[in-house]
Length: 137
Image (cartoon, rainbow, N blue to C red; front, side, top):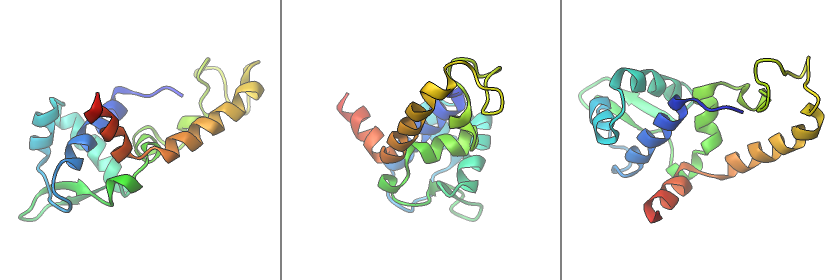
């Protein structure tokens, strides 16, 4: 599993949204500025998160974004799958360009169980948990 910078930006932006009053829509420009993120890039990321029911978007008077559900019910895995795609955890960590279930690398059978454990752990960690750790650091 290899994450892109887009996942990092998504978590940073969601961390900002958690600090806002629930249900309050925040402009994309405000979020991007608060976390020093590229606005155009963040717009594409937020479209993905909205399609996966992580965010709600509004185009009316209250134009912007808000969390689609409470932060403690949005897992880190939800975010990663929305941003990176559903096959994220099916990609080999060691040889992502050469290894697949159809053409496995020599270590594939040994690591398969560990990938499932990682997936389960990422499902258990909410973005609220992640932000609580960041606040203590």
